[in-house]
Image (cartoon, rainbow, N blue to C red; front, side):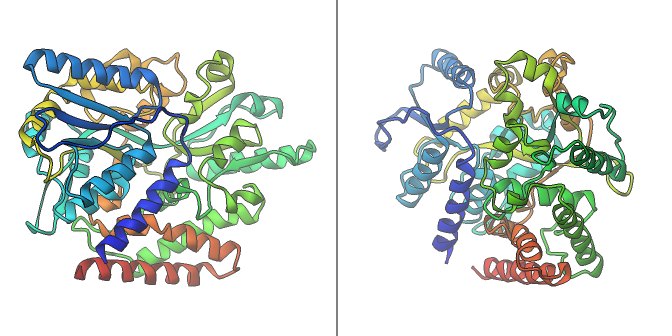
Length: 460
């Protein structure tokens, strides 16, 4: 049963990889010699070369300081996941693994199975520097010890962001002053759509919101909308709350709100079939005025064209919740892992303790060029993050440093990793739009499936 879950989760993780660059150099040496005294590190190749160069320099400095030998191997995202799964299954994992996607599914699963080493000594060395959400994201349940502990070392975080075309807004005659209240914000984009139609621009839609089962961004969008409507699916103990009438009603309200936008023509008709990269591509081709996307990969892809990056494209904070309260942003915390079967655990902990010293982590993060953000508040004080001349990084910094953040539900209960793997809420959206099922019936079907998943995980 557990291996079947691992396969299912791997397929979900693999789907996440399709939205990123696949033209990365593949390593040729990946087998491990248990008798080798070198510290072996498998690391997800960065989106930008300077990110890898920063890590290579940190490794070189540590080697020089300690006289230890290190074998650092970079993999593409899909290779990182596939190699790691195979190595764990064979009982021959690297000393350290970093994957940019494992925290969604594999990390909570491996922690539950007892496959990860406790990294509390690393965390304790810098614990006071981390955000509460970073610490919560690394504190996972181990079914063997029947306790929670730290099984990941937080490095950085990402969240969902809103991007829009300032130049298109100006072309259609709308002001760039976008309301911050929930209703006013979305009415602004509805008005933009109506203005486009009046001007004969039926080729452009106002909202490029992912809603398909095939897109992993849909998972983020729906979880963020549920957060906007103050829907708490799990309590602090990781127990399901979806049987509560007010929770069910909140889910119905949130899904009805989103599907009504689609039915009213504000979202492109083919968005129900989008793959991972389609919202990016559609937006960059200026076929939508705004879109929601995980990370700053959209503006990051335009950094070489200063006019687009600085003048045409904008990043926007989320509006306040319908209740009027400031929005809480969901965040995914990227973590380095040490496995229970890793051959050099003490050495691995020593290196990670060195890596997470603020001056080292700052170098690595800045190498990511704003794709990821600090999990140590003091790092936000660097001008790199607060530079108002950068209209994207500065806005995202404000979103993540000044407003509340919330970890993903799989941190509270690893069973929710399968909920995200199956994209259960996206299936509900599909039922409402394609199968013309009522929102109430679609939500009840989703609740039924989630309860089945939690029962399966509880007895395994």
